[in-house]
Image 1: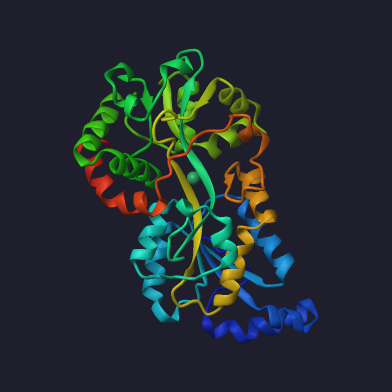
Image 2: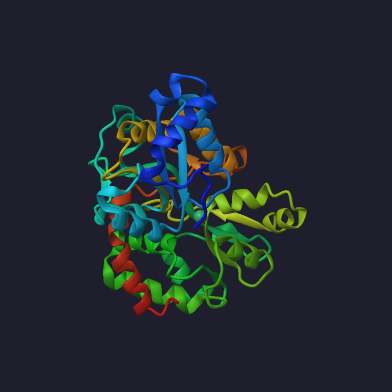
Amino acid sequence: MGMIGRRALGRGALGVVIGTALLALGGGSALAAGEVNIYSSRHYDSDQLLYDAFEKETGIRVNLIEGKDDELIERMKAEGRNSPADVLVAVDAGRLWRAQEAGILQPVSSDYLSKTIPPQYREKDGHWFGLSSRARVIIYNKDAVKPEELSTYEDLADPKWKDRLLIRSSTNVYNQSLTGSILAAHGPEKTEEWARGIAANLARPPQGGDTDQILAVAAGEGDVAISNTYYFGRMLNSDDPKVKAQAEKVGVFFPNQNDRGTHVNISGAGVAAHAPNKANAIKFIEFLAGPEAQKIFADANYEYPVLSSVPPHPTVAAWGEFTADKLNAAEYGRNNAEALKIMDRAGWK
Ligand code: FE
């Protein structure tokens, strides 16, 4: 667990810290503005830009605890009423759903958030809000596959892809959410059959993250992979010419364009159940959904903004518009646990 904030979070230290901030900033505004304690499991370097921008605009000090998602959820549960957490920031609706189920988030209402964020990207009672989206797409080796050969996630379970498919482990939440979306579309039996087909078509046992699957396709270890879009965006813009050259060997394909649309997941945030700084917590989430922060999500991490007035990064825009699956994030989030059981049964490691 890393700590980026300027001090350890703890109730005992609060008085001292506010005094220091007052001195450092030289005025009453710091005291009035206060602070916000963020627990984040987003694992992207670009996020510091978001926190800095929020501090600069509001004068509210951001104290950041970073950790793995399930660890943070456990920690907030254990801290209970004494938790200093104001906001939980997480990737994947599956995790936001788990956090909600664990009772560590509270419903909040915000006119700005309900107007700005499309309904399928937020929990209906305001327990959590999607702040950026990412499509889970097919990446294909341009020498081995023509885009006309690609169609749907379902098709990737067809024996014609035997020994050609790369996808990470079923323990990965992105795959659980994808499978959760298949479950919503087809029910458990067909989903298990699909997962069996996926497991049977793998070019190698699942290993590594999404970027590793793309690199393997570029290297010819398989012909098609499944990845979140921002990993590919990062590779295309890499400072490392070798990575960039690998990325240029592959293409991106948005599956299921003729039916329900491509599976899209979110990164988002919710207000902690016992937030000591609730008003600042809401301000923070509203800031993340505002134009300045949305541009950072788009430009620094190649995610799709949820705010319609902010365009995606040019690299991302160049992939073209696509139809996204409208399934509410809460639905595939809820389906996560059952999806994992199905994947296990199907032999998807
Ligand atoms: Fe990721």
